[in-house]
Amino acid sequence: MFLPALNALLNGLCAITLCVGFYFIKHHNREAHRTSILLAFVFSSAFLVSYIVNHALHGDTIFPGHGPVRAFYLTILGSHVILSIAALPMVLTTFFFTLTGRFQMHRRIARFTFPIWLYVSITGVAVFAFLKVYAY
Image 1 (cartoon, rainbow, N blue to C red):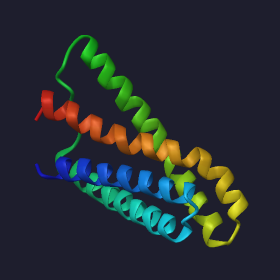
Image 2: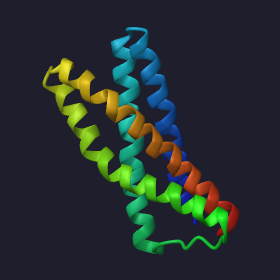
Image 3: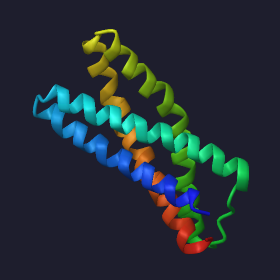
Image 4: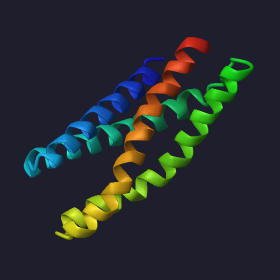
């Protein structure tokens, strides 16, 4: 049962490195920005592998809470799942534009990719916290 905690850790580290990367690009430090965002990508990729392994071994975890807390949890979980599906092609497209030197397009799509990727990372930790309190 260490995989859910590992998933939350990887999501948290991704969120931190995304924020650090955002800070660096706002201060025109492109090299540090690139390093931070690549590290965020590594954390997200490791998360995805760990998530798939966890669900292959243990299946889904049912949230046992009731009432308003269940509705709140399901709202967070639903938005997390939907935006995580959207985030993957956005992240890959943003990286593609960078790797092909199309920085204008990179900047244009990164304005949408960053907040979605950050939201997915933060809500991943929130989902774990809810389950830790109510289910594990």
